[in-house]
Image 1 (cartoon, one colour):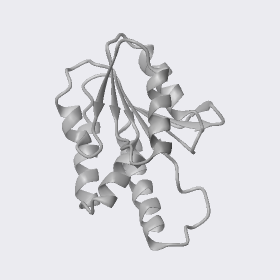
Image 2 (spheres, one colour):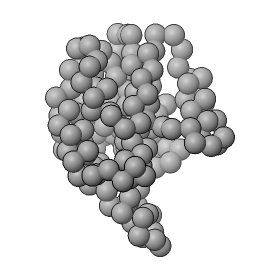
Image 3 (cartoon, one colour):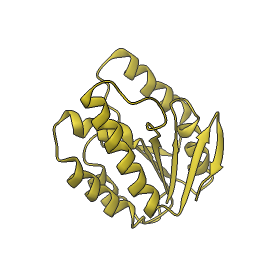
Length: 165
């Protein structure tokens, strides 16, 4: 499993797509985004436009572990992204510790080449409100747990991958 992490617009998704398509297809794109507004619909459309034939898209805004569990063995998978998935659970007021533990358990046993994208959110200023601080802390913990079980960790900076692990 390869974990690709970086800031907003650092090139995470595009690099992950390149890594996945270097594997024998068909490829599975597991999308965690939910299109609640026009701006998010545009972002989703941009991501879709970059993928050509050979991709199967699975929408898993909440049950990411379940979506991964039913995929065929050996299939290359791109999960984009963990921070949106975490946001969905926070907004639904789910037990984050339980959901993260369930996901990390599945990610620790990939059944093929899996590529997981997440945002690094802890390098900026301390947020000014409790919800944003809670999100930053939860994302940091989740990213640490996923990095620990990943075979490879790449940090994206200005479109360039830096191998961390």
